[in-house]
Length: 72
Image 1 (cartoon, rainbow, N blue to C red):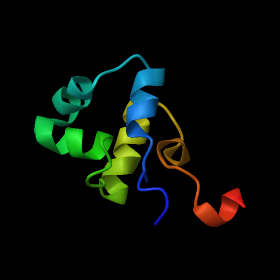
Image 2: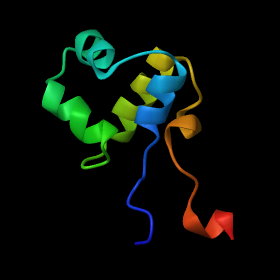
Image 3: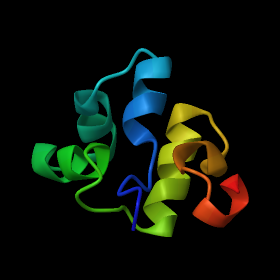
Image 4: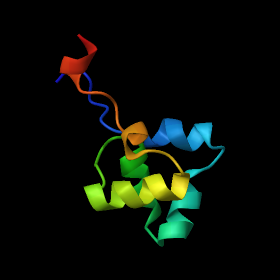
């Protein structure tokens, strides 16, 4: 795998002027969980990603990098 980054959560949070802690508080999650998502060490479930998109007021697709085959 050339690109280990799957989600764009960190970038979208930055674009929205938000911090990891905003997600932690809103969803009542552990800081470590959100940190793993933001650093692409772990991925949220699709349901959680959908809830996160609603919270951030973005399309769920904005939270993901395009597939490699699309870039070619």
